[in-house]
Image (cartoon, rainbow, N blue to C red; front, side, top):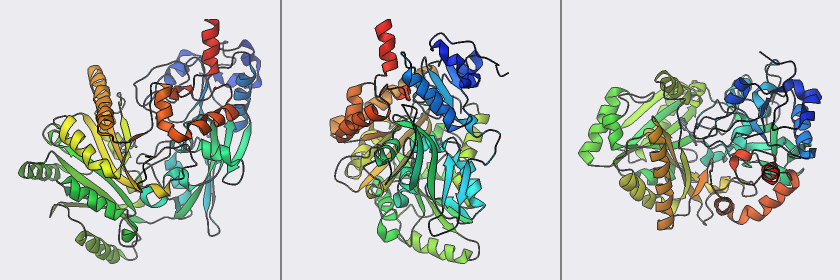
Length: 518
Ligand SMILES: Cc1ccn(-c2ncnc3[nH]cnc23)c1
């Protein structure tokens, strides 16, 4: 039940509880327990309170109060809490439950501007992408780039980059934003874009919550297709697999190719010991694929996952387009798996995965993830060292994604990092493990470490996506040449280092005060 007046929390300044916003603060154990962990379940750290803002002005008031108090306390915006290593936590501080912004006035914070040559949607940072999709489809429009899972917030994915199979063509989600409203670490509400307060605009996109809280994003839209031809093509040879993937994301394939290109790696042992069927593959499919791996003696099966958008007024043309495309690709003959679905069914495909995993009780488990961007020139070394070496006989629960993107679709002025070599293509490799026991957490974390060490020894210049580093040196290496600018922007927009301490990039003054008084 809501509290009339929360009891002042020990670690927060008493007069916080005299402010007008105090009634929106919850200090009870239920509220703080829910905000003490995230989807990754790798870290637990309790806030002193959870704040339920109604408007961006409420968030500004809370942050202004912390920034001007003698003992500034951490403040972390939390949407769905889908960070994996505690990035959305605020130990000893205040977690802002962003989802309370939208409550009560459904749709008020998603405004579609459908007219004109460049339609867009203004979406609250707390809005889920699935809700943005439903609102824009009412106008026959949709954002161009999607994460694999849609029950994530706009502010959360834009604070990382927002990658998925459409990014090879349109860049990550952060490359498809016109304007932001951001509440900075000094509690100012700033509207920013490429032309206005542009340093904050570029900082916040991929900014890991370090420079401000995204409360609105103006996102580019395109005409939405009605249907999708969704295919998976199986390969046993990684050279052929990556060659075809790179063709599919090249300009040559622009007219004749897919609208979406991703890829997965299935290690052999998972055929014997993994699920007998999945949302995409039937048991028969998986049997055929297991036999293929055996016959070819390959350590893994590689799938290209492609999607071709179309409208039902000319289904035969998508058949012809798909036939022509298949002729250009060298997958294992007969190993083409096709589904014909609506646009929403395709975009929301991971919901099915979530349902299966939740019903098996393995969705809310620890997720020791590792997401790497690997330079194209080293992807075969990576495959050889990791999938044919380190992980050859592994069979952890979870999925392995592997697909290329075009670096020139990313904007290097933004905080998100891509590999700093001079190549124009890099691969996303996502080891999305689910740990089904406590010692598996330790084992998988160690394995992830050894993957990164193997890359270091081989001189493979990786960057982490959804990054987690345990030292400021690690973060300096992550940001490389951007580090100087990033520290300047942090001093300008969050001088007390209040915001999103869970990323562990900057020692927060709040902590420093704590240490000083300890
Ligand atoms: C970069 C990233 C983080 C999570 N994903 C996922 N992709 C595909 N299926 C998923 N299921 C859960 N997370 C998934 C991809």
